Length: 91
Image 1: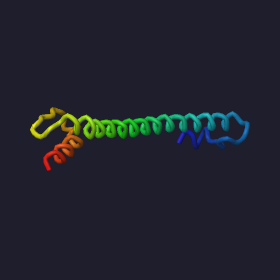
Image 2: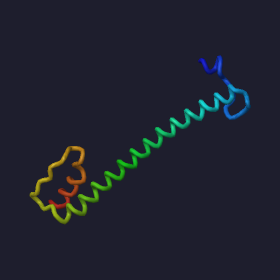
Image 3: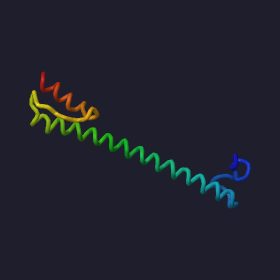
């Protein structure tokens, strides 16, 4: 409410100090949102690359070295690529 009652001015328009302050606040908010968006994009990108890397290891290293009856110890989070490889080997 403070902005509407005491500080409101058009953003990117005018030379008045309130307009300049509003523009700075607006651009500051945009910069913060951009930082968050980049962080989310990096996290998504990292997640995608990690998943692809685990799948690549399972399908290359695993196919050459893992045989039926071998045991792979890993966390529940990493189980899918190795379970798929196991299912392929058992068939």
